[in-house]
Length: 168
Image 1 (cartoon, rainbow, N blue to C red):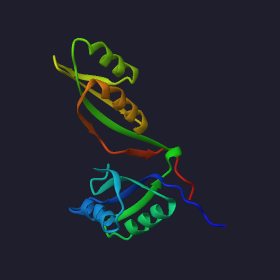
Image 2: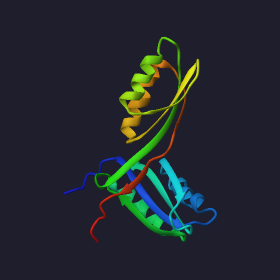
Image 3: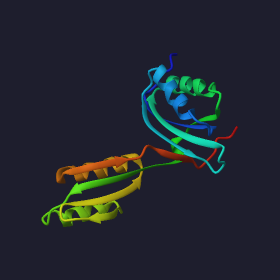
Image 4: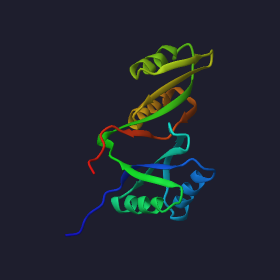
């Protein structure tokens, strides 16, 4: 019986030595293999000598296994983990600047309140809001502001941390 793989988003957590060029080598691997990176976030860990790189890639199980094996071959990479979304907290952050008028002001605030978003700035012509949440929630948030005229959107890549560790 043939195994059927479904394409979906996978989150790879890459723990690597915090050296110059390590992020370039990691992203270069994806480029050379013609894999698209949907999202990438990198930051130093509590250990200043290590960085964690979170990469979201869309593909089937075979692709993810292949990418994982290739990443593990990189010299500076310590560990690669494919995070289980069911056992992880997954978040993104968005800053959104929307056109504001006297007529739509209450509606803009109502949308922000619905999502428990923070209102950072209000001017005569715009409102700046921020929200942290699951990627689908942020998609809905942005979509609801579309009719008002989004002036600018800045969105982080996916950040995730596995709550339950897989048993070895």
